[in-house]
Amino acid sequence: MGVFVFLPLVLPLTAWPVARLAEQRLDPRTATRLLSAVAGVFAVCSTLCLGLLMIVGTAQLPGNPLPDSWSDPDVRAALPYDEIVGRAAIPALLAVLVSCGVAAWRQLRMRRRAAGALAGLPPTSVAVLPDRTPYAYALPGGRGRIVVSTGMLTGLTSAERRALFAHERAHLAGRHHRHLLTVLLAARANPFLRPLRTAVSYTAERWADEEAAAEVGSRRAVARAIGKAALLAPRAPAATLPALAGAGPVPRRVAALMRPAPAGRAWPPAWTAAGLAAWCAAFGTTVSALASANSAVTLILVLRGVAAPM
Image 1 (cartoon, rainbow, N blue to C red):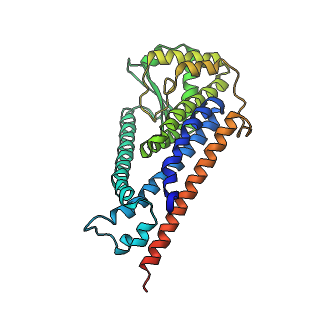
Image 2: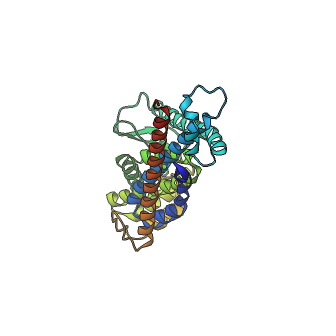
Image 3: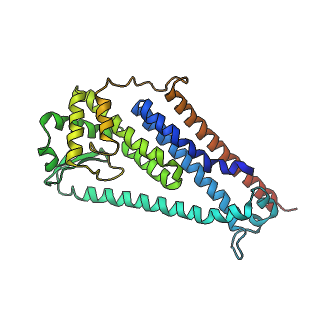
């Protein structure tokens, strides 16, 4: 394995400049897909890295029930600083698993509560709840449903309501909740990936903004709806329930809608800042995946060689 086993733990540091450039320069559709994929790969690779380090670390604990071959000197020699790093990986991996498990459980509980609040209502694509509290969000599951309160509807004009519904339909059609859940769990798996979570929360909203503007035919109407919804409901219902007044600086979203629609290139030219961010993200994830695969294969070969009968 050598020092390559540590690369997946530190390569997510590249997420900081990549996230900044991508959310500012890339088309929101491309940025959301790219950054969520990068976050997922980085998170899996770093967790696998901790698992490999834990194999070496647990073998040093007295009375462990693991196979004797795991504690062979050849296995420990494959990892630099095995005595320190191996043992430190044990609580680190446990913390990652617990944190991701808690986050996933909270999201599941939140969605069940949201679905339970709709019990007894007609199975329409839009569910209007008699609640003075202003809120509106896209609830995934099946074909998905748009949940909106009467408090939100009464605060918007007819044009702004059309923009709201178009925005939430774009969230459901684009499966934005999957991207948001991916970056949420990735940030729990590796704290260096938190900038990607913030960036994807913003670019997913921008994606829905552009889709809504194209559907209603007025970028200004969508901008007004966003601003008014943010004043009515300043807090989003949950991290992975996309909403018109959701994550991301509202003034930046409104300012973006006041400009012409983005070009929408699938992949920007390499000589631009956006292209540099995209290629750096692709290169970093490739190196991380290769380093993880190299470390895993190396450890498997070492364990087989040690466990093979003489």
